[in-house]
Length: 196
Ligand SMILES: [Zn+2]
Ligand SMILES: [Zn+2]
Image 1: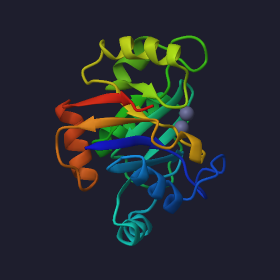
Image 2 (image 1 turned 90 degrees about the vertical axis):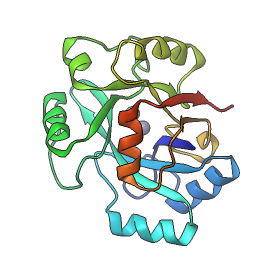
Image 3 (image 1 turned 135 degrees about the horizontal axis):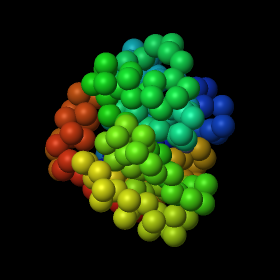
Image 4 (image 1 turned 60 degrees about the horizontal axis):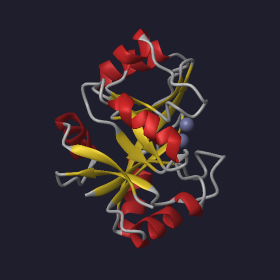
């Protein structure tokens, strides 16, 4: 299954110009089997998401992209709720309490690879393919993923129509809900792919 693990939509990410229904239409058209909404510092509530899922008949899940003192971190499996996670240490604590997985987002975006002991011991891997980064940035990041317990993930980081479907993660397992996604991530049986 091809799932985009990194997308932004309105109204939770004000920097995006997409609403979930638009994103789903394009994702389906461009060959994806599912998308995970990773809004900045907020997570869609399950009831709203379930409604959109029912209406669109498309796999739509929620993660979150946390803004931390060590850069952006993609989190899957965090419980929704108002928590201030301003530091990577706090994100790590929340992730371990919730059984969530953290991946360092677009590690090469700022022109240097952000990597040190704190990061290496806080995340399970990195976002190895980001559809909004350059080819060179993605080449650098792919190598980085080899040093972590799990493979790197892939996502479009879509904020507009243009980026939808550019990158994704290919899973061996069948994924129908957040629990399946977490199990599939933990299994390590997936790979990051660039799609255009
Ligand atoms: Zn980001
Ligand atoms: Zn993002």
